[in-house]
Image (cartoon, rainbow, N blue to C red; front, side):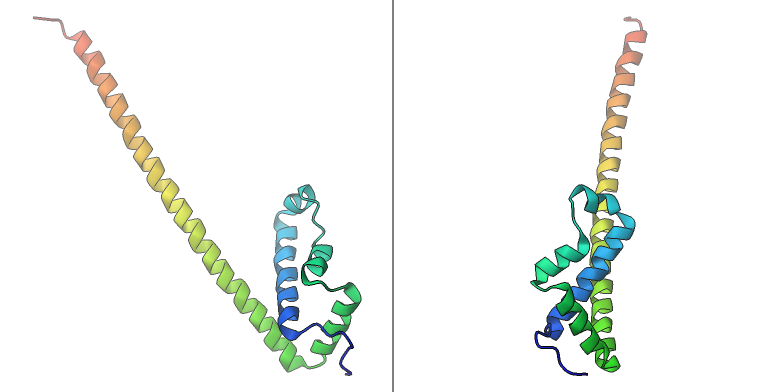
Length: 129
C-alpha cells in the first residue's frame, strides 16, 4: 500500500489507538461522565492529536496493511493498558486500605467515647457512701 501524504507518525498512531481504547472503556462503563462533560470521544481524540478522521482512516489502513507491524502497535497499546490498570488498581487498594485504617481508628474513638460515657453513667448509679 502506498504511504499516505499526511501519515500519522507511528508513535502518535499508537497514542491515538490507546486513547480510543480508554475512551471506549469509559463510554461503556461511565457514559454519564462523558455526557455531563459534553465529551464526544472521537472528536476529543482528533482534537487532542491534531488529526482528522480522513487522516486517521488512511493512516490506519496504511499501518494495517503490514499486519506484523500493526500487531506490534496493538501489543504496545495492550501493554500500556495493562500497566495503567495495575497502577490504577494499586492506587485504589492504597486508598481502600487508608479508608479501612481510618474506619478502624474512628471506631476505636467511638468505642472509647461510649466506654467513658457508660462509666460515667454507672458512676451516677452507685450511691455515695
